[in-house]
Image 1 (cartoon, one colour):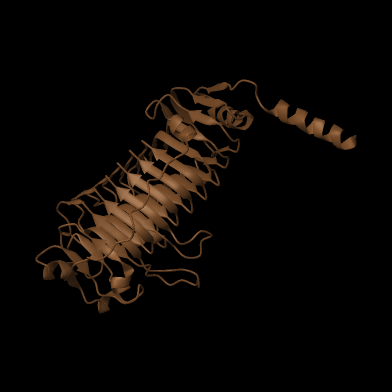
Image 2 (tube, helix red, strand yellow; image 1 turned 120 degrees about the vertical axis):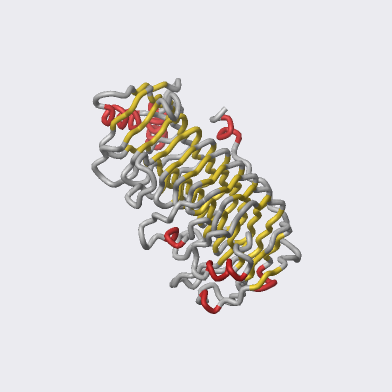
Length: 401
């Protein structure tokens, strides 16, 4: 009898906490916006839409959302603006830690830390969002613009990020990812996929960054062995912004003028992209070169297929060690594709692009660059099987229609 009573009480509590009808919770800009908006994010229940009115929301502290199934929707990225110019602490602008959340149609400006971070938030959607540090590229800007980590099913669609001191659009330690129809400019890294499994990065524009698109795998993180990433149908052009990352960050080592860089990853496809005006190189395939203390880490690159890309002007102003000498040795510019050479034929780095490829001739990822033996190479051979398309759950796709 006691068990039946306890079960009935639990059921009643569950029913009481679930709204019968999803609500719109309207929040207007103006005085008290900080408290009113944070309160709306706290009292929202699954299915509710927190609707941001038009105008600038002057915020002095970060916001947080920890309720599943909530949509935060503005009137448009140039109409509903969350301004953190007066933010007192250095945390995120908006932190999301719940599942099935949709963020859309608003802007975040000048956050002291990361602009929008979601952690452990499965089925997260970022759509039609602008993130910008309005003072231009600066080391003091927040590190990340769009920043989902440790999640499954991540959809980033139609966002614009400007001025991040690390990565504009960053997805880390996650699974099943699509980044599409977005623009990243004047960031250190335009788009970065790090320690992730199964990602499609397509139909984006990465321009005026230090490096356009990075696919990295780093040591000493809970999820390692990044793999199955397709980078295709992107425009990667004029990534010539000097590196302004704080010293010590891994992206501080990315040379200005980098188009796409693959580091310490496996099972990667790079195809149908358009490259132009990247001063160092269009595609770099390299191992992890820094010291690490992680016995399970694999620092080299394996199974990369490069095909059907359009290569414009590149390699004319290399910003990496020995770049000037290499350019001089190869007629004034570095070849469009650079591979460190680690692993030889067994690494299975294959390119069918009709452009020169430079093999640096290294035998270890951490080998001093001064000992390289660069030579032109043909990256032919049997490539790994084609990777499958990444598909989002229907509910996530429906949320942005």
